[in-house]
Each structure stands twice: as structure tokens, then as C-alpha cells.
Length: 59
Image (cartoon, rainbow, N blue to C red; front, side, top):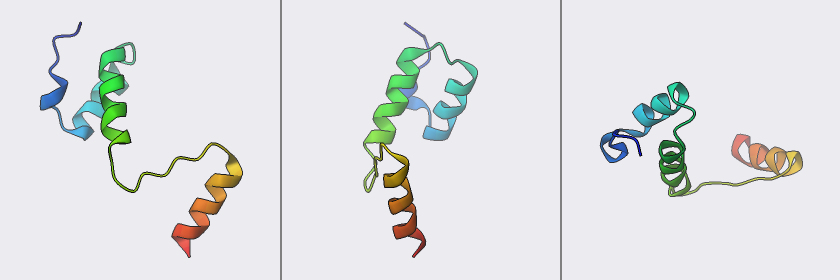
């Protein structure tokens, strides 16, 4: 377990930490939980879905 307290980092700080410590699975999972909790999050699994969502937002 890492000694870094992820709860005290901002989202941007945590993202930077993960960039420099890609092996820290615990930090990565915590970051994913933050991202997944955001309202209005859109999940796409195909290029076609991505194109549709982009068109909606650019219209």
C-alpha cells in the first residue's frame, strides 16, 4: 500500500501523480472512482457512438 493520501489530492494533482507512477494501481482506481462519479458523464464504446455524442455537443 502506498503512503500517499489520495483523499487529500485534487483531481489534477492525482492525475499528475498517476502519470508519474503508472504502477500505482490503488491511485489509478481512486482516480477512476472520481471520474465515474462526475455528473453528465457519457460513456461510449464504439467510434460511431463517439461521433454521435460529439455531433450533439457541437451542434
